[in-house]
Image (cartoon, rainbow, N blue to C red; front, side, top):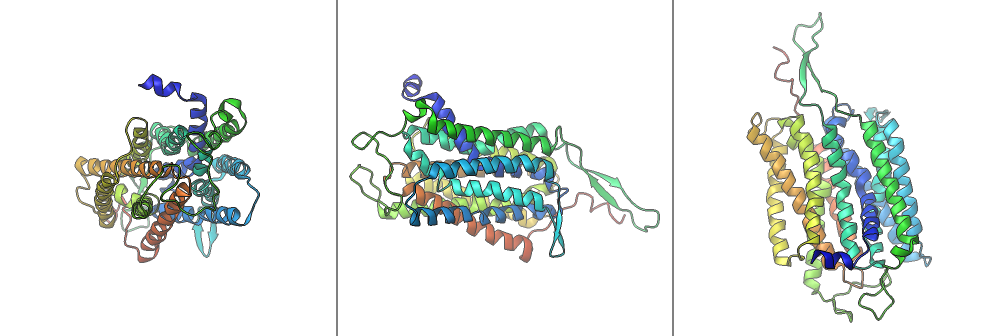
Length: 431
C-alpha cells in the first residue's frame, strides 16, 4: 500500500511543496517559541504575547490587499507576489537576529519596536499565505496539498524542536538585591542562560525561509514539478476556476456539499482559528508561567509540535465526517475553557506548586494544539475538491476568526486587565 502511494507521486515535488508550506508561518512561529526567553527581558513583559497576536492580526492587511488585487486586476502574477513575500520574510528574519533587543519609547512607554516591526513583516507573509499560498497549490495534483499542509504544520514543529534543544536553562533563582539603605529585603529573578542565543535561533529560521523561497522557485521552474501540475480540462483533475467565481455547492465535476454544511464548516474553521490564532496564544504566558519557566517552555515547544503531528494523520487516515469534527471541536472548547480558567486564576492557579499542575497545563496545551491542527487539516481537505472558491473562503474564515479573537483578548489583557502576572520572588520580598 505504501509503495503504491509513493509510486504515484514525485517525492522531490513533495519536498518542494512541504518546504513551500514551511515558509508560510515559520517566521511568526519561530518568534513565538522564543517567548519564554523574550518575555523576561522585553519591556512589555507578560503582555508581549498579546501585543504579538494583535500585530499578527494587523497583518491581515495582506489578504485585504490581495483580495482587492484579484478583484480589480486582470494581470495574474500570484507566483511573483509569492516570490516577493518569501524573500521579504527571509530578509526580515535575518535582520531580526541582530536587532531583536532594540527598543524605543512610543507615547511615553518603552516597546520592543525592532522585534514587533520585523515580526509584522513575517506575519504579513503568514496571513497572506492563507488566501494565496494554499490556493496556489490547486495548480498541482491533489496529493501535494497534504504535503503543503504538513509543511505549514512543520513551521511550528521545526522551531519547537530547535527551541527544545536550546532550552531555557531551568526555573529562575531569587537573588538578594537589597541595598544598604533599604529597610525591606528585595529579591530579583535570575534566569539561567540557554544553550545558544536567540540570535543563532533567528539565523536558523531565516535560513529555512530562504530554502522555502528556493523550493517555490523549483516548483515553478523544474520540469519534474511542472509535470505534476494538473492536466488540462477533460482529465480527472481540472485547473482552478476563476477566483472571482461564486461559491459552488454542487458542480458538474461531481463535488457536492450542502449550503448548510458549507457554511457550518466555515464557521467551525473561524471558531478554531478564533481560539488557536487569536485568543489562546495571548493568554498562554498567564496560564503557564505561574507553574514555572520550564513548564512554560515545555508548553510552547511541545504544543507547537502537536499541530503538525496531528496533520501528518492526513497521510494515513481518511478525512473524518462532519459529525466527528463537531465532537472534536466540542472537546477543544472544553480544554480551551480550562486553560482560560488557569490564566484568569493567575498568579495563584490551582495545583501551582505541584508536578500535577505542571503536567495538566502542559498536557492540555498539547491536546489543544493537536486538535486545532487536525480540525483545520480536515476542513481544508473537505474543501479541496471544490472547483469554486472553497479554499479561498477557508482562508478568509481563518483570518476573520483570528482577528476577532486577537482583538477581544488584547482588550482583556491590556485594558480590562483580567489577567495578572506572577513573580517567583514576590513571596520573599518584604521579609
